[in-house]
Length: 332
Image (cartoon, rainbow, N blue to C red; front, side, top):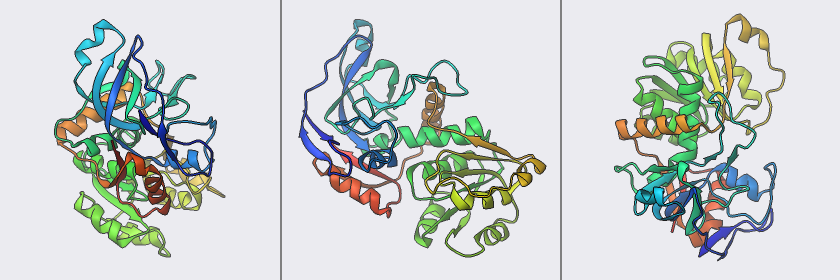
């Protein structure tokens, strides 16, 4: 079969022939119809991710049709359209992942291939209202946003939410999920165009984080502080998020793409009773809850652009440029 393979860090993704996976007990072979990129894939290629072992077929997101299974008891899956839960061996504690937890696409072979071997427990029915590119875009970022909003921050309808850095996959899911849950959602972005597009997805408005004094500007526009803030950047701006959080509010974050917050003033956090909640990926219960929510509200992931599998290197460069709004897909 054909696959996109990272053979060396800081080298182009190779499109090459690799051995087909075989069905073994407990696992299924899925013929993939579409996959989607995450920043994790780019960071692996650039050598910026921990525990890199090469060569590897990257990719955590995928959707396709079950071709075969290793156990007779799993035969009802054959021929079914599925999405893949990329959270492998989460463990038994829903509060945090266990020591065997890992994300599909490193070290396990990922979805940037024509076929994949995946545990049957990680299969889920494809939402019928989604196209193949939309379905493939859902799993990792959707589950990450779901856990941050509902499992960790315990969002309820009517609350005011801030989603930072809108335009990326997880941030857009957080916007869509919060709006569907009845929250008032505001966003930040580097681009006025992205803020305008976010408003078409349910955002009440937003500001550019490149503007001087953007926190005061945002607070004035929103008419007050925020109950819940969802962030993946960290860095110097994180202290400003604390200032924007109302007493008793929650900040859930799942990344630090701009580094650790320097000189963080913790006094504002404890005096306001603010909860700062780290989160990542999700448990099987999170994935199931996210899937049901998407189906109930008929939500559709935003797909920025889809590339052929053979053009995976171009897709990586498109992500590195940072101009996308939504998920970047691969079609098989």
